[in-house]
Image (cartoon, rainbow, N blue to C red; front, side, top):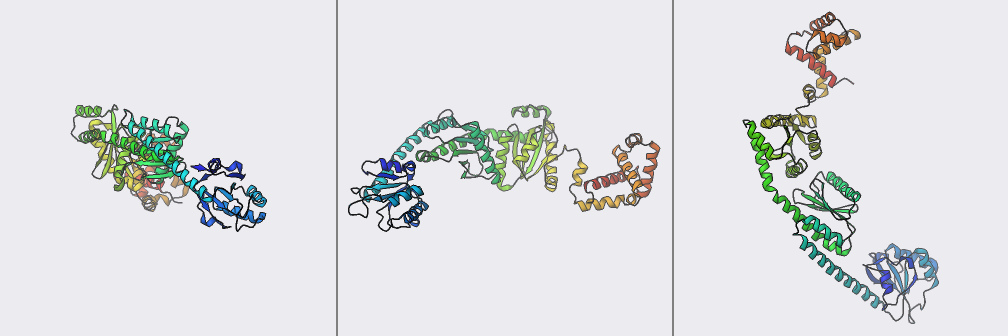
Length: 498
């Protein structure tokens, strides 16, 4: 990059600053000659615009309008050519005053320097700088390539990058956990970079691919179909760093891919262990040996089953394996199955990694009974689809879960049909009988516990239950009738009338 200050400092040009001494750090992208008084449509920004002022009215309003037009076109500076055969031998005061007011750097080009000399200097200097930048980038690329085979390639590559560029670089795994970062990258910057990454992944529904710019960071995804890692790079790169950044990202990607390939045999072994543990007739001693071979120290394990989006199954499996490292993951029968030591965090982790997907979770069992937990989990996937959340066999309130599968109007209709004889009573008696029925059923028809809960004499409870039996036509010594009354009470609680 060359600036207006560089052009002023070139002795062969002899440029003199008339106005804007404090604004000479503006980059120059090209040199251009124009006598138009409204040149902005012909500009692209960053030009050193040269003119002899042939068509410019030398009064302050005209000069202000001209420089504002130049400023709108993004000029780096305006250079007025002087000479005995030209309109002006000195800079006219109206143009100088306008430059001070508008804030555009104004230069003078001496009469012995043709505009073509300025143009040639600008482009020759830019070409020389590009050559130097390219040589520096090639040297940097050689350094990066040389350390790519070091014992710790990620750290070695990032060390070299820190010498090449001031731009921060953070490398994460496929779920956004930091693997490495450049020396000097603070915890605060690392946290900002990973927060931006997680936001980008969430917005892309987990399918962030290729290269993308997010604020002051650019994110490079490693992996074609499954994101194995992310390289988060500061976007403010000088030309040398920009040339070398592609080499850095490529070498980091090669190292990540190499690690992934190196762990393939272990992933296959763990999948085989999963299959063996799922045998229903496996002996406890053999199951324990298999569990220990994959690092399980917990006495109890459980299975979760996810119905995946077929297009993103591989990516989901990778995220699960990475985040649930003690667990075993496999794709079986179109479902993703996870066997994991019993953990309070298991359901939360799966919910975060598989949002919106149907998930069933079996109860915690001993390792030799893993097939039982798997059967439960598979059975609950359909239920999870209906209720729209993760469903676990350990939830306890199975009745409430089943009631959740029906529409509210269906539940209310069922409850009203069973409890209609009681609903016809006056308010006080209806409330007393319904409350007595609920408490009596809650303690499984035990008279004394029900009486204690209701603060009544047991005979009062007996009399009320007998009246309910008469009114509803249900026999209280019949399990089906009692269950029907219990479900009706639960259905009314689950879907009350508005």
